[in-house]
Image 1: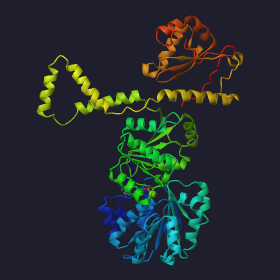
Image 2 (image 1 turned 90 degrees about the horizontal axis):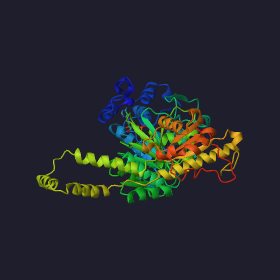
Image 3 (image 1 turned 45 degrees about the vertical axis):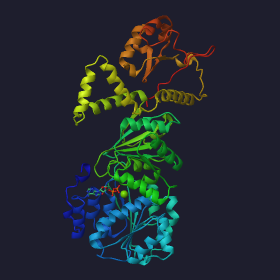
Image 4 (image 1 turned 180 degrees about the vertical axis):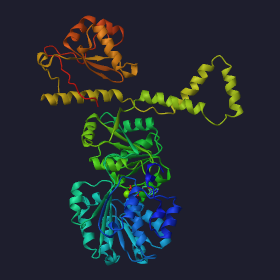
Length: 570
Ligand code: ADP
Ligand code: MG
């Protein structure tokens, strides 16, 4: 248990009753996580209202379940505690976590979630349950039917508390709280706790003790962040490329809408991936089946709306993949928090158009989170990677081929056309593999357009060729070269080549922007003049084609040359 078990104390240092210690030991939990330690050791805090902020995956569920169960009477059959969760899936998961701890205490848990049979829930309530875990709508239903004794409840836990106080839940929440006359304690747990929520919480909590183990909500030591720039309108193709490239063990993909979630899952299935959707238009049975299959590892990719953004704990999610923008920084944090849980490491990927990328950057401003920025992998790169993978599969396979095939191989290798036969074999094997879509050119084009747009905006001019006057701007010319990073070009070397070819010193060369297949260079006036004279040099080395690569950039007759801004690289 990597980072999570940093606490020195073991569970035996806390006055937990033997049944709980036993249950913890059975699950293999020996040390409390930091948030569990803080809550368990603060006995005074436990008497009153509480706001607890701790990172995603840090064990908050047991941080409230343990002290609650520790003080309950064994065999308690009146509902004493109500836990509210924003989604059905989370409520079911939390009920399960409670159940595994409460069993030896003979305390039953009732899961009161929408979309599932009312009758079974009513039966459980009649039989007697000490802890109720549910979603607000269904809990309110039960309250209105007088299905349980509201007066016995003394503790309310709002898991994902900041979200529970959102507008979307507020009316139901107030109605629930108003019908619990004996409520003594209200606890709010979350990884994020915006200031507005803390202010708002005074409506429901009195003088809460605040326990916070979070320094910067955005950063999480076990989660690495990577962003892939993708061309607009090519989300699914980009996702497929990224999946081929990253080959995730188990991935949770977030989509912005239900419709897109369904479409993406279907297209992934069509492309041969093991994927299922999860969203609110599905029946609860289907939803449970999808999440269940994902938990059990029967399906490797779950494509979900934000219904799975908060609280969901699935072991072994190696990648969270966010298609598009998260809306808020907090949502980004919750989504990415589905990986990197319980001390394991995880990777959060964002697939963003160049424009979205800027929005995300501004969302993250002021936070200490570092993102690795990459362009979406292109099919030619994936092909190379797949080639390596196939090569390793064939060469490093543990199993010895059977004698029949060995003999056959020897026989082939003895022939003249052995090379052709092996090549054909590889070709057939390779044809079964996908190398995704060619996307890079589109992306490059879009990034250029985006930069032009930004530049024009800054200059207060329309996005078309701006026609900035040369003398005003110092007359910088942009030159497009037909070789890029993938051709082995490096910035330093290119600078040298340009200076040599154009017979200028390096002050005459401005920004060099290196892309995979091409490069863009800013030339000062002198260098631009020399270009007309010495371009043969660059043609010889393949940087320019003979007919003139000014094509796209060449000033139209009558217009001035375009100035290029010194922009920060993405
Ligand atoms: P959070 O609510 O903070 O996001 P969870 O309560 O869902 O986190 O817990 C995350 C994971 O850590 C769960 O799989 C849980 O079973 C596991 N876990 C909780 N407490 C411990 C512990 N003391 N030792 C090891 N694993 C734990
Ligand atoms: Mg939680």
